Image (cartoon, rainbow, N blue to C red; front, side, top):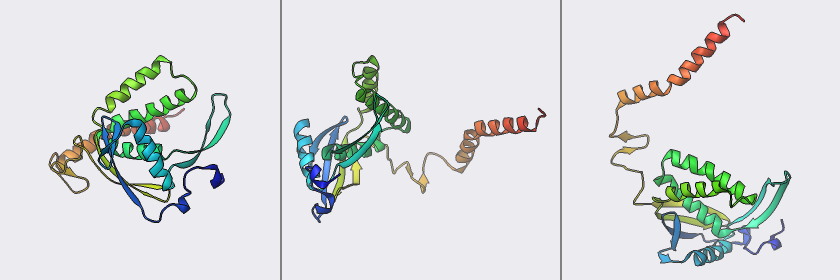
Length: 208
């Protein structure tokens, strides 16, 4: 796709100095940029302007259509790229493993149905209810660096963060269990795999 097809700055022509932004979130909704509160429309407009100047948000998407054919589109969405990156990072520290798994799965399904014009199907309201509930704890600040088309997350914080250095430090220390607990947990976690392996081994050894 030629550069002239885009309105945003080409990454190669973006400023040589990186720009850092801190986005504030409340209950899954972006509310501020560098401490300045903005309404949703103004937020998108400002992020489009800033991100566009730094070459952020250009992409080419290849996907399937409801008619069964493949489609390819070039697009530019600086605000969406920045919002998705910061929102996803914040969710990592406030949502449980299974909340993240289910939300990712349902988000793909929701997007597919929406793309195919199924917005009014009742299942969409069901998915929205799950997503709304999942966002109750998604509040905090995320700092990113924009540089020549790239978005790098520098850090995030939240009053609802599940990180607790007083309880455990990944790969180093913890206060909730010791080696004996870990050994027992490993054995129990492997039971289903051991049973499956034993059953299959016996089946392979049995005469036909």
